[in-house]
Length: 427
Image (cartoon, rainbow, N blue to C red; front, top):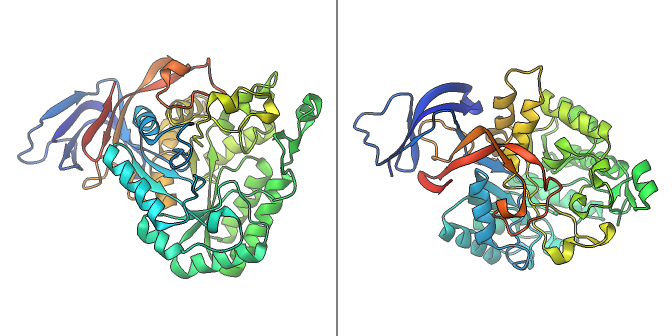
């Protein structure tokens, strides 16, 4: 379909564009910006006056719950949530049931996502068989099946020899290993940030050193192997200091943070609100400020939704017994706009915010997405940066209705989402 998006404020951080101009889409690709290409005839047009036109969002951590956890969410519900949130490309962790450790499972997931014809789904393969941390998976076969990297999800490898072998293997073939730094023993079974608040509430804690000890180990193994590592969902200021130093040293490392950690602290647990039970846990105010600073100075490469839908039976329980996780696909854009709004000293805060959820995560994951360059796949989001909406279960398409932001009024509402040139969703 030939699509003409007119009069919108086009923001494309990858190309340094921030101007009111028209966008032309033909044959599933970006055909032109500004003036129409020769012979272009629009079959459909969208008037984006007063709206922002940006690349479709790229989310580095979205659990779609298939296969195995369909009672929590289905591919249909989460793909719908993605396009309603303006997310056109997403990376899903391998902790499904069965685990994504065989090519057939990866191919099935990719096939199911293709049939739905909404967001682009890129699975991570399991680094070890069954995520058990013992035997390495057939990474080459999983890559052929469509995996873009390898991860352990929430299952740390206790045997560092296995992790070293995995990194050496990945380096040989040029694969990226995605790790969430967590010590397998310190903080194991903890449910909240280890601090005065957890002590007062009688909750078992996860200390910051659980993250930093794991990072020291990962960096030593990276120096030995030369492998490229992406660190997932960093939660503390101390960890960001180590990553900053590692980047300065020249180690091939990137990192992301979950969008919840940009805004909330352990104080938001309030009176044991299970919606604030997340992994990694919400940290102290000092950690939150460190995350915000690291987003500005470039230490953090991307922000993800950390979308983890949980059903009522597993969430509406006492805090320590509730399953960790929150829905995030439909909140990612609004929460990034909220962060941009609060950066009063930075006139370019909005393009920066959009960059952290478009071309920067795409570059981190090695995906051809997150840009409006001519010839690129036409993945586009059109949103109203001023529209206000109330975060309520009825407003969310995701099957998971639990988020610590329930009851908040946020700005930024998606009006249309285009995936590979077709209008996937329109409000």
